[in-house]
Amino acid sequence: MEQAWFAEGHDSFGLMKQAAWQMAQHIEQLYEQKYLKARASADHKVYRRNACQQRASIWVGKGNNGGDGWLIAYYLQQAGWEVKVIAVGYAAEDLDTDYQVEIANKVDKHDVLSDAKQAQQIALSAKVNYQRFEDSGTNQSELKGINWQADIYIDALFGIGLDRAPEGVYEQAISAFNKVTQSNDALAIAVDIPSGLVASTGQVFERIAIQADVTLCLIARKFGLHTKDGMDYSGSVIDIPLIPTQSSNSAATLVTVAHALNARRQNSYKGSYGHVLVIGGNRIDGSQGMGGAAILSANSVMATGAGKITVACHDAFHGALLTSLPDAMTIDLHDKEGVKTLIKDASVVTIGMGLGRDKKAQALFISYVQAAITEKKPLVIDADGLYHLASLQMSREHPHKHELIAQLRQHSMDHQVCLTPHSGEAARLLDKKINIVEDDRLTAIKQCANTYGGDWVLKGAGSLVLEQRILEQKGSQAHIYVCGVGNAGMATAGMGDVLSGVIAGLLAQKDLEDEARCLHQSVLLHALAGDALVNDTDYYQHNSSLLIGQRGLQAQDMPVAIRHVMQLITNKN
Ligand SMILES: NC(=O)C1=CN([C@@H]2O[C@H](COP(=O)(O)OP(=O)(O)OC[C@H]3O[C@@H](n4cnc5c(N)ncnc54)[C@H](OP(=O)(O)O)[C@@H]3O)[C@@H](O)[C@H]2O)[C@@H](O)CC1
Ligand SMILES: Nc1ncnc2c1ncn2[C@@H]1O[C@H](COP(=O)(O)OP(=O)(O)O)[C@@H](O)[C@H]1O
Ligand SMILES: [K+]
Image: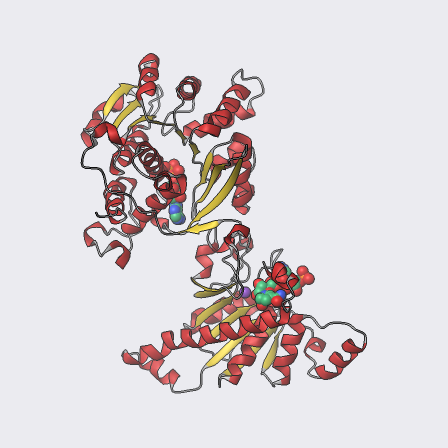
């Protein structure tokens, strides 16, 4: 986006000055929020501190992110702040104040000074106070220059240019920054992205990254702020758009607000809202069994408002299922003909939750998925279903290998097929190590869709959703969404089963608009329901009867929250 802007003739250093100027204004506001407003409180320590001049410590690297930092220091100093730049990775001669000579030399040679150098020069000419961050080897206690206490610490070490793990002096600087901000209880503000976090993936190398309270994000939201480690390091994110941008250029769309649901028609009946068939909950001879997976999924189907449900699970679990969900009809998972007849009648088939991984379960999987394809049904495939799919893809001798996968791919061209792996399942589907998937989730979800077709969720913090849009001209185009809500309380067993139920439940309700039934809407609803159980915010209208908190949140708590969120987003007319 930057490059396109420059190609139109806009000046890159002008953009950097604009970025730094706007960031300096945000920093002043953030200072006010943290310290001045606290005057009203009885916190005398904070009050005394504010009797003095505002102080900012700005840690700069050598690239353009550092350039932003030098200019922020300059603007804050202009505004009356006491500032100190901590220059990391700079040799003593890099900070030679006699820059006018250097500029003259460069201009003579028709050489252009880089934006970062120009920024540094402006700050040094204005006599901005600075100090080199010196390599202290392994002895952290000897770090010099960071004893100066500031109210606000600004991280301008690395931005989108970080391309490898920070080592040596950079690693020391990042850990010193975190230490000093935490021990001073000072505000840590990251410029563009916390240094150490990879903007395009959300990856942090060996946990070495700035722990920011606020990130001032320039031009466009970085994908890495919202998936994998991003949310743990970036704090709250403030956008500084700077230039007009087109969303069509974006790698993904961040979604936080659900599409509104239309109210139900008065003149309707259970058949108007679809019939979901849940296939899972097996007990393999001699093992414990996974009945809960199908039960949790089924409960969520009904919480979204689907009209009818049948659960094909092992006989042993029918009693337990009916105790928690008397609305369900049941059939024995192993009754092949019976289940196939039900597939004909279903609006949506969801398969895999606790289905089992042995050969018998694999045969059931193949047979039921083929029946759903023959009957032209929308399909949701989760958990052990994904395990079997991966096995079919990997095994060379299996007679069904290409057949089922090719059929599924073909089916997904005209009917909705949703596949919902977490990183471990995706790794198996791609025959890769989990860390390869985790380190670049965006690439992984695209590879899943390329290999198997269909719509995908790559679950986890900041779930990714890939939806294939059928184009008028032949073919399809993938669009990616990042779920911007949800919480770590949802990292418990059975939460994925709940998601598969939400997806199937919404898909079944054909009275809803397409946007309200699509995959990213289901992922969003599931995450919003998780948040409703832990956040006491206006969005959830202080429904304190729901509040549980992150620790101890269970998948079985979700249906009531799903119903609550469904009701909040339904248009009243
Ligand atoms: N251009 C503009 O007008 C605008 C730009 N903007 C700002 O620019 C930022 C992007 O700047 P950028 O591309 O210069 O990259 P940046 O993030 O500073 O890092 C590159 C430097 O770090 C180094 N380096 C990398 N990894 C390293 C490691 N592990 N360990 C050690 N060194 C490492 C790398 O060194 P090298 O790889 O060459 O050795 C290089 O020196 C962007 O985030 C935004 O803040 C805004 O002002 C808007 C206008
Ligand atoms: N840290 C987290 N932040 C947001 N959502 C999460 C987090 N951890 C898990 N979730 C969500 O909870 C669900 C867990 O699914 P999964 O791992 O398949 O659980 P299970 O297999 O036990 O049912 C996914 O939808 C995932 O996105
Ligand atoms: K940064």
